[in-house]
Length: 448
Image (tube, rainbow, N blue to C red; front, top):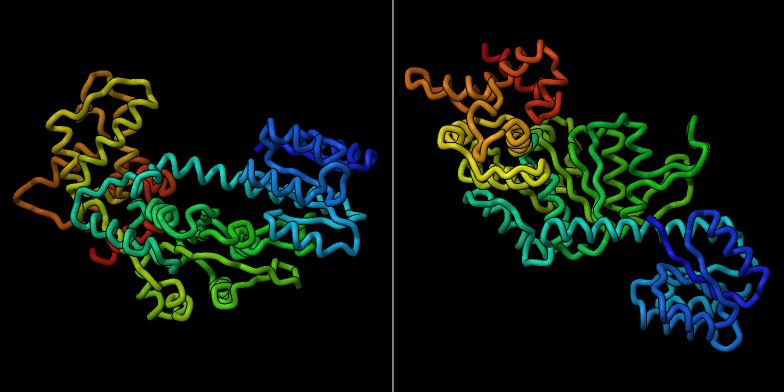
């Protein structure tokens, strides 16, 4: 994000040097050589960051700090204080300064502090946008929950809103575990703090360690600079660990230590960093079974599982299918600039009878595809996937009623055959991971 900075510094050479350096970093910079002139300019225009010397003619830095925070509460302030004047810095921090730096200061250190503030403000901006998109201004974000089972999930989220407990969310791929994690965060006590997420299944152990903990320069080949990890960036907020069951035993042990000690080390580092975080984890696997088999640490499970939330698959909450379908229809019709009012009766019957092995994610993909293809005011059956139409006809045969597991396996096999055996493409169409597809096919072979 672009950031506007104001520098109040009475030494002309220092002021010019700072303005030049920060402009080179891509910031918009203005300045003044005394406190009174600085305040006149800041009072009329909002700045994201004010950097001010403590000792200045006209108005000192502490007085300027108070006026800035009174007028612009969201403006961050860094104070510059002389060597040996730490008391002034402490006083400034009490009055609301974000940070301080002592003279003679290292320019690189100041640039790093400014970059940290930009990173923080960028996260705050993303959080504000996300909250607006979810409707956080209301009592609870808009969430499609017509079924009794999903209303129970909403009630659990409401009940833990005042708590700061760690949470494990379980359920099949595509049921909406990520959305529920966001709901928990943005209706909880850390709603104004960062929310960051990482999918543990898409990284190797080494890359996931670097992603979570960060690394120091030279920690490994290619680490030419130091890097902050998500634990550091999300400090005071929430870290969402999706597919937690895919995390290696080594990283499970390190994560447990972070939760217990509330501190961590960067990869290749020796300096501890504090970690004030709430953890929300999710998995589509039977994590209790993994614990019993010794594939997931029992102590980590209990640390994360202060509260558990199970999200049922879409086939077990069919009352949600048409409300979700209408929601996705409106969403993707606007995106495609089309006027589509709804669904034909036959289309609704197909949508309501289908088993959705990819759950809500698959339903959205189906509706988006239909919107792109449809040229009339109503979604017709011919614009649903061909395999879905065939599947619907087969599954209503009263002479051979199938279980939901059989329906899921049959449809997965049909999709796989449809794409010539390409598992990656089949998993994408189904809206599930390759691991989930492999598990469905394995179970199918075991039962044959």
